[in-house]
View (cartoon, rainbow, N blue to C red):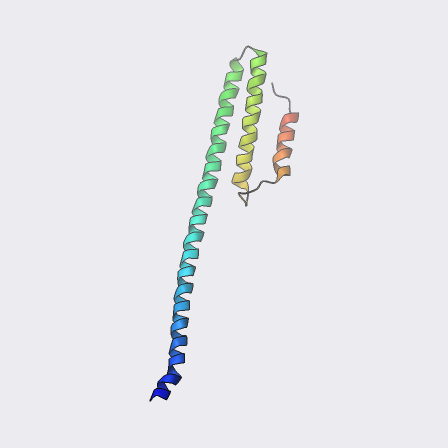
Length: 124
């Protein structure tokens, strides 16, 4: 009788070990799914933040443009244009991030080329 149990015991131990490993794998898979969902949600929120920031900067630039139309002092107008240019630069970074696949980096050429062309166009 003992020899029969002795033969079956390793089989049951192996089955129980496999069940524990399966349960652990299922817990790990469920955790990875939750983690992936959380990551995707944060990515959507980050994209929304970049979009809103860019839009706010565009509104600020528009308000500066309206103020420039009434400015009577060329020195102040030049300073306001410089401020506006800096805001547009920051806005462009947010636009590039909003349109990029990877939110952790921006292609420098994609960022610099529009800035150079914008600089070469004289502004009134």
